[in-house]
Length: 283
Length: 283
Image 1: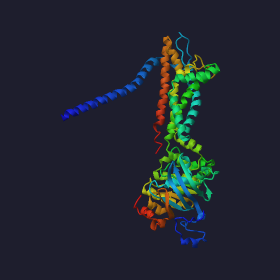
Image 2: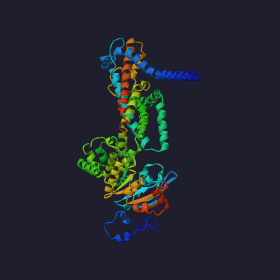
Image 3: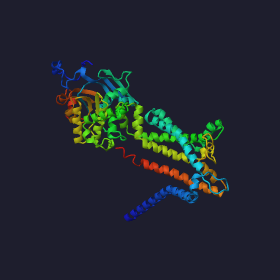
């Protein structure tokens, strides 16, 4: 995980000076603190190559946004990270992915182990309809073998507080999860993912189906969560990427066009295509 | 000219409407015919003794079909022991595991089996069970009904599992839950009402089967004390009473038909009640 010469990120003079400092700005990418790094990651569905040799280093405890037009491979990239493509019969993944330095495709690694360390929130909120609010939050723990009622309750409360839902649901934890509003359901899904205490949180357009108010709450939540978690968020909404992310990757037609600090990518992009996209000239 | 044309159109429209309406009535008319006849001819013989007593010998008035009613329930219980686990698990395989090619053949096989005439099922079980054991038995009757239930339950289970949105499976797996656990405790739980419905409909279907029981369960004029002995069943009792030359028995056949019809109707109504709020749980 050394700095690759072909990295798209421009050298940042501040990095060298601050190298000794223990507290670094989260936007500063340091290989040693990369949570996830991909090397020439390609994904095929049958004969279609959807992702083309994407090499990316995602810094820990920061928000990394993946942007790009529809069909550019954003979600495919995200789903490769927690091995969701294992479930698709004709999907094939090539290249390397490391999670805190560990190869997630190593033969002795079970996808289940990886998915416990990498939580995921989907575009369409999907709380389990047969379960109550409380059961939805604890389901990941219960089905992974945690039986102790006291610690289940504790972790549930913790997760609901973290996802900023506790005050709204604490009096009706046994109500069906589907009785919540759309925005609340999405925060419940975030709580459900947080309850198993992952290290990384993948978010696939988590706010695209929500109204502006609910979107704002999710964004506040993401900014809060990045203190403890590495977050990778796929978004269609460039303002959203600009508001909440530290780094942004721009994908186009399955290729990584540009990756760098969000402020830079949106104001002084290196590539013409990035500039066209972020200024709304295409896509 | 123009108005004449309109009048003609209107006339044809009304004619067609009447025609389709008559056809629709023809579809449900047999139902009322059956109910009316069975009620009229059977109701007079349905009394307390009919449910609680054994059949009386020819010429002696009164008596009941208690053994046949209990026998039918015993046969259905035996059939469920065989048909429900195999059918449900097979349906889970078709929906959740398996490859496209294999599943096509399995599905095709199940559909062919659903069309096999019931007398052929009876002959097969006669050859496989009755001949080697050298006796008609409740076991043989339960086995044949159970085998008939398997493809029915398998297909309905598969269909209702497919209705469970993919998002729930992904959410469960992304929590690091093992696939078998996710299937049993989340996917199957979400579709449970539909699966129960399929089981009930299969029970209703085989409850009235007569032909396969003729040379497996065989029928019995007394209580069955051991499942390795022949056993009475309502359809068998109706059959032997209906073809008998005695008026008493003919009356009892009508009464038996009424009881069987009510039983099947009750199952169908409970299925309706079960499925009524099936889609309200989904958002």
